[in-house]
Amino acid sequence: MKRFLMGLLLVPVLASAQAPAPYAKRWPLVLSGEQAGAYRVVLDAEVYATTAWPDLRDVDVLDAHGKPVAAALFGPEQPSALPARRIVVPWFPLPASAGEGSVPSRVSAQFGENGRIVRIEADGGTASAAAPPRTFLVDLSGIRDNVEALEFTWDAGTPREARYRVEGSRDLQDWDVVQDRVTLVELQRGSQRLLRDEVPIRSGFRYVRFVPLDASPALPIREVRVRLDAVHLQQAVQWSELRGRRVSEQGVDGFIYENTGRYPIALADLAMDDYAVGEWTLESRDAADAPWRLRAGPWVAYRVGGDRPSASPAQPLASDPARDRYWRLRNRSALPDQVPTLRLGYRPEVMVFLAQGTPPYALVAGSASARRAAVPMPALIDALRRERGEDWQPAPAYLSPSATLAGDAALVAPPTPRDWKAWLLWGLLVLGAALVAAFAFSLLRSRPPA
Image 1 (cartoon, rainbow, N blue to C red):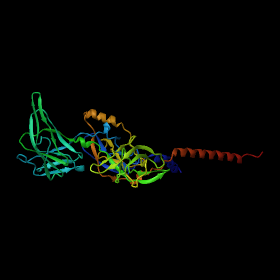
Image 2 (tube, one colour):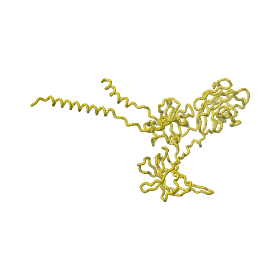
Image 3 (tube, rainbow, N blue to C red):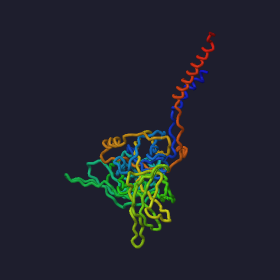
Image 4 (cartoon, helix red, strand yellow):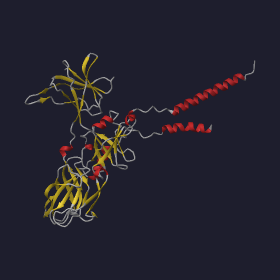
């Protein structure tokens, strides 16, 4: 009996213990650098299609042990989410054979995650960074954005000039000549200074090798940075194309569309192969029984062919970006026979997170019970910027192919937990009432006759 009562007392305690919230999918993250402090990852269409909530509360970043790190969601134009223009990348010395323009006869590398080099051996010996190298290799395997140039930082003060041949490779086996001859130079005369510490380079290579072309002393390199192409860093508009059906609701004819994800829709357009002209209005709602809200229009949509084809521009939404599930397209005149394809445009949002816990990190999404913790991310980013320089921004991180975790089961809302305290109180009240009734009944039975 005592064990039974102890079990009843432990039930509320066990019920209050919450297990980690399950997620539908997981995306491993590839970091562009090792010591950036904070990172930004651009959400893709699969993330928007997986999340269960309009506010994306179930999109989060976890460390290697499954613990959430400080993370926040931003629009692509918000200051805290702007991309970094320069990223520090690793470099390795390569001992070369004697002779101008020579390279190691044998190079082997030890790779870490995602192809990043952690150790290099050349000509039978381990390359050491204790002495400034003449031949060296730059590892760009963590960069997936378009590269514009490599920038070098070396110990200042001594005049120097070094010429190199620049080669690129994707696998450390086959090398292509990127530039036949480049010069890195630092000269100073009085107050005048001549400095060239960058090398333009095109994208597409995971590794870049610098081979000396003269006998000048090696550069005492302290840091190598990659400068990204600013034009390609801008978030382009992504389009979601929806196929609709013709419906009539309460005497109103229109076309109904169902969106496949929680995209932050900001633009609307039509794709009509028959070049139909019409004056359209666009409405949306998030539930089948909710009222429709006007989002765009009326606007005249047209397609004109011929020698100089033209089309109506995309229409911006009249309100803030909408994540509604259902969209309705109406025409002031008769509807065309062909159902137009509705194109909804959005700019992907950015998840910014701090390098906390144990890497590697992963982005997770799709949960009916999870909620990302609120953190003062703008203040944290400002603190890091004061420490690392005014030009500092979170470094890029990239989504790897997703892996299924709990799948659709994570999207099912858990049952409402029972209020064990209320049940216990009610039980005590019923038990007390029963005891009072039993005591009264016993008194009535034992009452002597008059």
